Amino acid sequence: MDIAAIKKELRSILGAEKVLTEDLDLMYYSYDSSFLTKLEPKNPYAVVFPKSTEDVQKVMRFAYQNDIPIIPRGAGTGETGGCIAMDGGIVFDLSTWDDIVEIDAPNMQVIVRPGIIHAKLNEQLAQQNLFFPPDPGSSQMCTVGGMVANNASGLRAVKYGCTEQYILGLEVVLPNGEVIMTGGMKAKCIKNVSGLNLTKLMVGSEGVLGIVTQIRLRVWPKPKARGIAMAVFDRLDDAPAAVLDTYQAGILPSGIEILDSSAIEAVNGFKPEINLPEAEAILLFEVDGNPPSVDYEGQVIKEVVGKRARTIEWSTEPQRMAQLWEGRSITATAAARVRKDGSRIFAGEDISVPLSRVADTLRAIRALGDKYGIKVVNYGHIGDGNVHTAPVINPEIPEEVERVMKLVDEIHLLAIELQGSTTGEHGVGAVRRPYAQLEHGKAVEYMQGVKKVFDDKGIMNPGKLF
Ligand SMILES: Cc1cc2nc3c(=O)[nH]c(=O)nc-3n(C[C@H](O)[C@H](O)[C@H](O)COP(=O)(O)OP(=O)(O)OC[C@H]3O[C@@H](n4cnc5c(N)ncnc54)[C@H](O)[C@@H]3O)c2cc1C
Image (cartoon, rainbow, N blue to C red; front, side, top):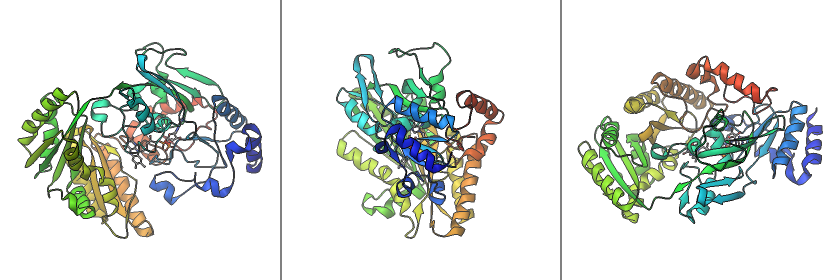
């Protein structure tokens, strides 16, 4: 079927108001937040805005009958080209289908449509002293559907885990238009071990199995108190060692973040008034819970971490906590400003390594930056070994782009070499596909087999994952 005919048919299936077909409109769907799609943007044939499960089914059936690729999209904040039509196709923009169907507080769960923005959901839940704990840095922008597809998490994953731990059930439309409910057709229970766990399979499947149209999420009581500790280290190796000491002292903070010397320099360069101490590393510990337990845990952290740190400060006072945290909160922005003619690129930005290898990883990335003559700013979620690296280049200079791509490749290989993963948060998408075999070996064949069961024609988000 030619593209003009596809556009015409989509308008007749959904109505013209739910379909975009003009080149200028399609251009906005040619990239996400990844560097790859900035380099090589790709327009889809058309974009549709479904507002019901039936809308999704109707377009899926049409695409299935005509072998047209289907690409689900939330807010497009993904860093891996996951929501991009790599070789044409129909993009399903789910961001406007954002209802909260039900906040079922007595059963500690909520049912939402895929387009709800994470922060907006948490605003509503807060009114009932509840929250959905995973906390991506993109909270104000990303959709919960996108979080499910990418199994997103954030700096509090160290205590609260990733999205997968909160998904109780999903409604999914498969490429042939069939609808399945995972986690029980009518279930409202929290514990459920019946059947093969298709919910877990769908979470993190990056849109290659079907379109998630409804999500049943577990919610938690919102913690009442919070405290922050900032510790400054003269030796990089003392930072991960202090994290381990904290765990061994029986404390599980809600977040443990690291800024290495490159990030400290970037923050001070961008906002000198923050004036972070010069050091090999700064750690920020966040503790949450009930006031007495927060106070107790803060005191233990002070004592245990204080044995290795040059200085440590603990506070539960809101204004001081915000000051202590400010350096971390602007690190990503500061990274982009370390070079006047440069910008931070999102590539190789998300590796995950064992806790015991964090210091080695940071040292190795510094060495790789030197090898390729590229400034790299390092920070991240040290509590679970998720390191964020921010290479800064001038993307207008092709030779620099070529160099940074080699650097990024080495960063990915380094992660696998150190018994880690190419991605701790942002997913595989189109960007990390080349590493699938190296990371998973024979298991990739079984992954492909599973995909075939759901997507026999291979039309669901092609060019992603493997
Ligand atoms: C500034 C910034 C900070 C970030 N910080 C974090 C962070 O701390 N932690 C983290 O995990 N990520 C982070 N990200 C990455 C990104 O925000 C997350 O992966 C997020 O979950 C993507 O949501 P989205 O709605 O933008 O999805 P999109 O980018 O639109 O799509 C992402 C993937 O999900 C699929 N998809 C989307 N909706 C559906 C659906 N309904 N059904 C099936 N498949 C679907 C798409 O096909 C694609 O493969 C950050 C991104 C930015 C720009």
